[in-house]
Picture 1 (cartoon, rainbow, N blue to C red):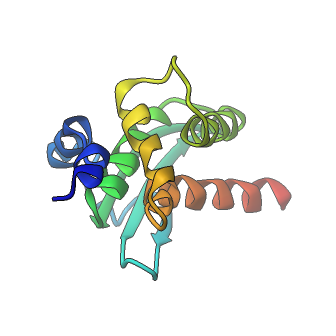
Picture 2: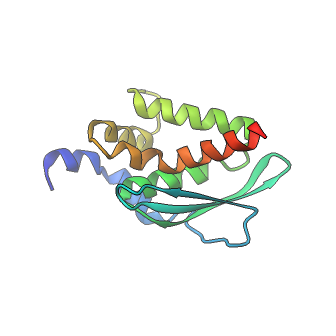
Length: 142
């Protein structure tokens, strides 16, 4: 693996994607959001259950590269027990941290942020987040 790619695929990303945290297929979920990147083939279903406007259960299932899987795992963990208005803020905060050097970011977010230096790889780190953002935008616009 080239040195630059080794730098991108840091241990924290590889460990997160292998952990399967949040990886669970749930056909009975209240909401199923599809996230698909036709350029690289990453494809996830994001499963959400709400109680009122708060996420009470979140998981994902599908396939993708280490970056997209680690990012999606982080997302389903991060959005637990958040209201719809909090979700929008969480997504915007994550996207902002990916696009800028942010010293207060957790180690995994810092590692994922390196993808912005690799054409085509940044999409892997935002795929599921963008799908959730689109769903929320459509939900609040109605």
